[in-house]
Image: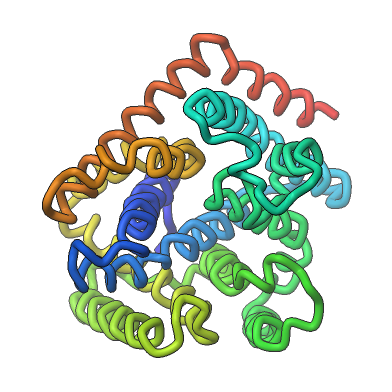
Length: 341
């Protein structure tokens, strides 16, 4: 079973919804233990984004022709163009709106004496947890994983080396011999699993009823295990990285099974997934600027629906602004120049 472009977009829709819930209720207890426990488990959203990224990159990279070195450089340049240009557009808007609303650089970088350095590093996606918005730490993670991708692709080339590579990735994640951000934050396992799934097509046959029952059972077990681990050891639990990677894989399998059984189930998810990147880059600002509005409703599901509506509405508006100033055409033009290089 292969994932199509529509499938990966829908999975991004699932991931961004889980991210919104995670950020809404992770540090709030007034909405009950269930909402809080789900928020802990829903950090799997990061692993889902990484799985889909590894999957999509592998599918695209497999189509490259010789010479591999030059085409690899062009491939990575295109990825960085497609990453940085949308990010910079949102970055400028978020910083502008944030500062006008009173969220200054002093608030964003309280421990720094050099605000300009922080600002420039943030623009390059390299500030990690010290970013203007704390959720932008993911930028640094994905930038490093893009650089590691060609090496990981060679490792995943055949089934035997992929298995050995997965063992090595797990060992590196446990030992952490170097202070690399993607090791410290645990991004490689989910990313590499996505690559292996794309290269060796081991996703289950969704028409098999036994597979659907098995995937549902595995997902429930992993969720319970993840929630228990968080309660006993906190969000930084040592084994949580690997459980999230496996849970991301099982969620992908569950989505495939669901989509085959109920084809219309993917429509709304694909719509949300289309704007997932912009929503990720902007939603945390609203939590900081208008928390009284977001948390004004009495039930967690209503708070989530309001937050989803606000985040999605702003994302649609930002995409319209990009088209209005022809920013999307600029991105396409730069990508074409890289391809002709």
